[in-house]
Length: 131
Image (cartoon, rainbow, N blue to C red):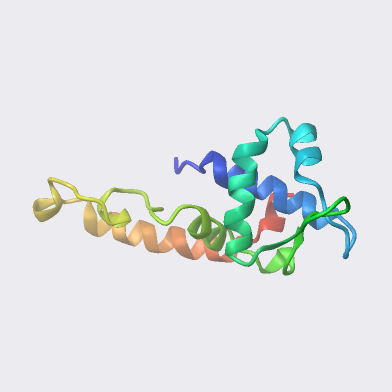
């Protein structure tokens, strides 16, 4: 089974909550964290990455918070994972990490095919598919 990181899990929850908000409404991160039992500091880091990736916008002040910067349907699972984890992949060699068996690995060709199929599926999976 491929593991979805806690960061991606929480990011999906945040994006889905922002999608439920009114068009111009900003959602406060502290309130969302309280409602969701998620660490504020951890989610603040995730929100910063989502903002840098162009998924959400931020506003400061009493009515500030976060809102979607684009339609939720246009955010694929693959793009979200890439925004939060630049070393995603099923095996070390496909994540660009060192592997002692890389020269004589019998799994790499098959894992490469699996990785390609998985990437395709994740590109076709929108965040709204998690509702």
